[in-house]
Length: 184
Image 1 (cartoon, rainbow, N blue to C red):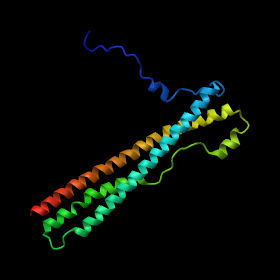
Image 2: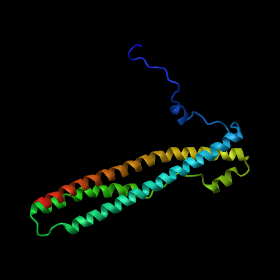
Image 3: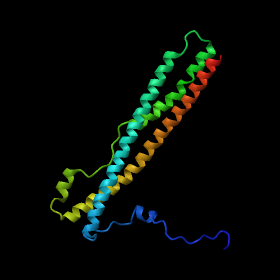
Image 4: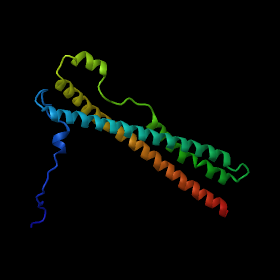
């Protein structure tokens, strides 16, 4: 075997070929059993995506609440009669927890998400079409919704992870501050 030469594999990555086809198959060219399966699978995938959004919103809400409580506790337990250095040390905890609260709030904010197509529009546009054509249009809409939502979910997840990071930094700082206060 020569260096730099790749070994043949038993499978090939076709994800780039599947992501965005040049042109969708025209309605009526996909077999009804396949169409029914795709209809169900895309519905399930969209439901899973919306469940993931709910979980991320719950996590962001928890992180925001936790950060807000910690900030309140820091303000309440900061020693009033301590030295200036100790007061500054407690004050420095605020910039560590504030970004956690900020990123969590940013991730938690209300946003519109793509879902199933609008039923009123479907009724107006496709009620006279055959069921296969209708299912085909719903599948295309769901696939587009999943694609659009994936980018937004990735951004939301990134904000939640940043909130986690700043919360961990704040905890480490508070732990060091507590140890310092106990030793001093």
